[in-house]
Length: 183
Image 1 (cartoon, helix red, strand yellow):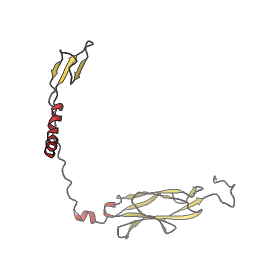
Image 2: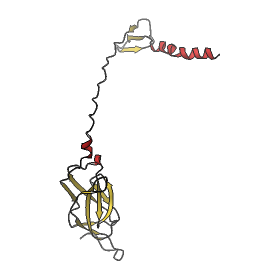
Image 3: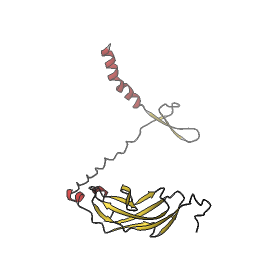
Image 4: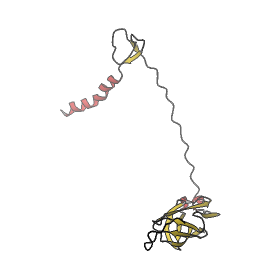
């Protein structure tokens, strides 16, 4: 019984391949439309021979040349790093104490080497291991604050820093809930 089952399993691809190789028929109906089918609708249908399929060989993609080891370990010399928003002495009016900062850097941050950004709020680490040029702050207390940012390498050594900027956060007071945040 097993040998019969084995033979049937081995013959299945050949049985199904015969149905795949069936003929195609082409005919024109009474309205002048050209039709194709694997079954002729009547005796006047012609056997249609499909043209060969055009093929194109795959394009070989050149391999990326290996990066020289000294390039990946070479320390980037940063020339410009600045907090572009908010501006120096900006007044931020937000009842939840939320705001964002934007940074600009030249040359680009070398994340391949492991460089990252640390943002300080009042000389304390507020956000660390950033690789984007923006940071979001939430629930910052009202009052004056100092913001600065550092570029560090993967060992934590500071490579470059921004100048510190001052901002003033305005939030409604629980002592004076009717006060408006508009000047």
